[in-house]
Image (tube, rainbow, N blue to C red; front, side):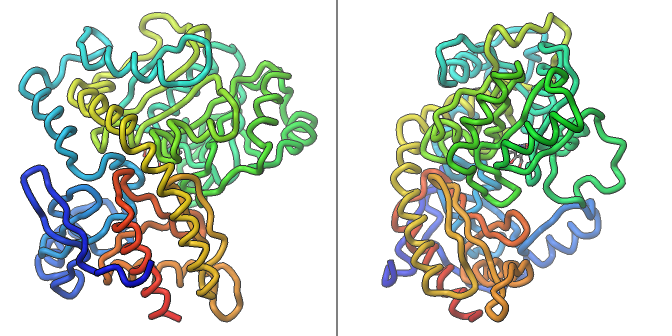
Amino acid sequence: MLGVKKEAIETHHADGWIGPAPHIVTNLPGPNATAFIARDHAYSSPSYTRDVPLVVKRGAGSVIEDVDGNRFLDFAAGIAVCSTGHCHPKVVAAIENQTRNLIHICGSDFYYPPMVDVMEKLANLAPGPAKKRVFLTNSGTEAVEAAIKLARFHSNRKWIISFYGAFHGRTMGALSLTCSKVRQKEKFGPLVPMVTHAPYGEIDFIENQLFKRQVSPHEVAAIFVEAVQGEGGYILPPPNFLADLRALCDRHGILLVCDEIQSGCGRTGKWFAFEHYGIIPDIITVAKGIASGMPLGALIAREDIMDWPPGAQGSTFGGNPVCCAAAMATLELVETHFMSNAATLGPKLVKSLESICAERRAVGNPRGLGLMCAIDVMSRKSGKPDAKHRDKIIRGAFDRGLVLLPCGDYSIRFCPPLCINETQLEVGLRLFDETLASLA
Ligand code: PLP
């Protein structure tokens, strides 16, 4: 891994070559970035969490360039969104072409080809013999919102169960299921009633505690689960957890909803992370990676479940033609190239993280599926989880030209674009390792 030439990476932008990365030419933030950040701070909502002072001008593949000409390797992909990399020429062409023909007409009221294409594609790639139907949204949280409504409508039951550590979004329904950080909920209540939570991975708790003491299983509409918990810390489920959850839902007539908003669209080397665990959910939510950064989410459900009548659910923008055109280009690229790239490079990424963790005291618990990987950060003295040191590592990596994001309470996630190549992965990991060495 070590010894890869630092400036070995050349990346092409839709408009041409943007140059090698990493390539750091100013102190960070540079003068232009500093000016933008000052303007941002004057007007932006203080609720945004910016971990590093990165002001992006453009991106190509797995490389981003800031407004001062510094170039970074992107191991965050806009929170696991830029599945095909930044500005893939085929995605750009699809968007350009669509904007010349039709930007908006409202799919709740009329028909248009890109919307039909996306619904047909998503319905057909969702596994299982039963026919599926699709409802399109603008975001992940709206897909979850729609799933809550569909689960209640179809089952005529009210209760929903989700898990500690879960992140399902920030609108009031999805937020009621989210159970990740108290800051996300503080003072926003009352939230949607008849929602309760169980520890992720503990099937017995649901059967022996919730169903005995809090809610009859006959009143539970759905259980929402992330096959791999995302914001909660890139937590893989215990081996039989999802299969046991499927069986529990079947026993009690409860709908199983897999939230694949972060883990779906090829990120783990399969279309959906739940496919690694041999289950088929009743309802799937997707968003993030499906349109390479254009806002699109989807609810995919078995036809017999999606039984709400005209007018029960709709959206002005959901399934916008430009987003759908981007999605069709994205899904084709993921299907033909990038899902297999994630499947090939994922084990290499985990192996490299394992060898880094074996060398460096501050990091441990390397884990992941495909290009959805993480490590925990510990205090070098006490060996206890250390969020502050985690933040220092993220900043140190940024100063070297590597963009990373935190997750969970004390973890760092590695979720690069699915188009990343092996050299880029190796260079990024070397920058990460150098950062750890410098902070040891
Ligand atoms: N569900 C999961 C698993 C997520 O990771 C996220 C976002 O991080 C959401 C839902 C919410 O998606 P959005 O931010 O597009 O509303």
